[in-house]
Image (cartoon, rainbow, N blue to C red; front, side, top):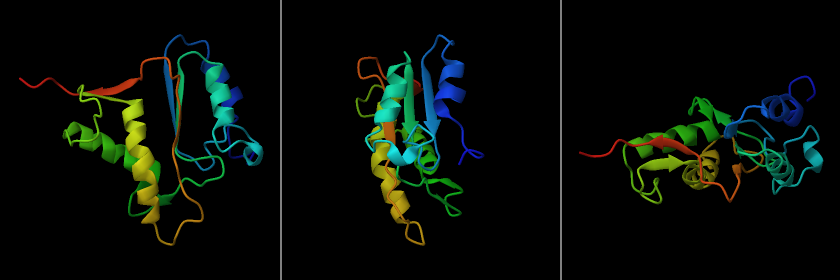
Length: 158
């Protein structure tokens, strides 16, 4: 693990903390919800990630899975399940498929994206063969008091 992993707090968050802007980290990796090198003792609720994000103003994190889960890939998807579901959601949003833009404001924000991913990723993982060893449930850590980060804005209809 030490040779193939990053210490998220030391090598990412602390390094970028001096940049004065809102930050969104998308992490598609096994055990990504742990947020520490000792994922076995991390809370499944994302407590460690909440601590990391809470100490950084303007930091939001979206992880592909919980601390005890794998982040599955499949040749059929040509991506991880999290990335595949994200691409599909964005594509549906650009085609204005109902149910993606929850508040119908013409914008896709991280909370709307997450709402869709938390349903779609587990469904996609269940189609994987052989049957996965664990579930895969994305995790979002975002400041509940700040406005959601808008990822995409549709052009206004004329």
